[in-house]
Image (spheres, protein in one colour):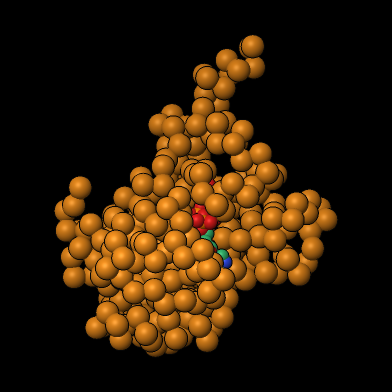
Length: 270
Ligand SMILES: NC(=O)c1ccc[n+]([C@@H]2O[C@H](COP(=O)([O-])OP(=O)(O)OC[C@H]3O[C@@H](n4cnc5c(N)ncnc54)[C@H](O)[C@@H]3O)[C@@H](O)[C@H]2O)c1
C-alpha cells in the first residue's frame, strides 16, 4: 500500500538490526511511501550484515554511528544531509539496550555502570541526536522526530528492569526538546509507545512470551504488530500530523486504558 505520503522527504532511520526490528519495517514502509533516507546502527551491530539486505532493497546508504557518541552523530548527520542533498524531514530513534537486563541483574541489585549505559544508549542518545541536529540546523520546518517507547515508563512491569527508567527519561527528553525545537523551527518530537513485539530487544526481557500473551488478552484490539507500528510512524512523519508534538502516543490496541478484560477474568476462573 503506497500513498506517496513521504514523497520528497529525507530522513535517518536508527536501529534496523534484522527483519524483526521495528526500524526494519519502518524503513520498508518509508521506501514504499517515496522517502529517501539513510540507515544507521552501532558499528558492532553491523557485524551480522543483515542491514545490507535492507539497504539493497530500499536503495539506501548505511552510515554507522554509535548513538552514544556525539562525534559519531555529528558525522552521521553531516554525511546524511550531504548524501541526501539537503536538510532532513524525519528521524526514527529505535534504540534500546540494557546490560542489567541482558545479564539478569535484578532491579534492586542493578550494576550502576550498566545502569548508566542503559540511560546513555536508550534515552540520552535521543538528546544527543536532537542536540546535534539542532546545532547544525539539519532539520527542515515541520520535520518529525519519533522515538519508540514502552508503557513501563508509566506503570511497573517488573522484568522490564532499568529500561523502565530509561523510557521515562526518553519521554521526558521528548517533551523538553520538543518544546525548544518547536519554538526554533516548528520541529515535532514524539514518542510512540508500542505493544510488546517479538524482536531481538523484546525477547531479551525475562518472561517475554508469557507477557506478550497476557498483553494480547488485555488489549481490546490485540497487540499491535511491528508493521502496524511502522504505519503509525509513517503517519507521524507525514504532513497529516503537523500539530502533534511533545506527546507520548500509545500504539497498543487499547492496553493502556484497560483495567481488565473478560478473557483475563475467565483465566482466573479456571
Ligand atoms: N520489542 C518490543 O516489545 C518493544 C515494545 C515497545 C518499544 N520497543 C522499543 O522499540 C525500539 C526498537 O527495538 P526493537 O524491538 O525493534 O528491537 P531491536 O533489537 O531490533 O532494535 C534495537 C536496536 O538498538 C540498536 N542499538 C543498541 N545500542 C546502540 C547504540 N549504542 N547505537 C546505535 N544503535 C544501538 C541495536 O543495534 C538494534 O538495532 C527500542 O527503543 C525498544 O525499546 C520495543
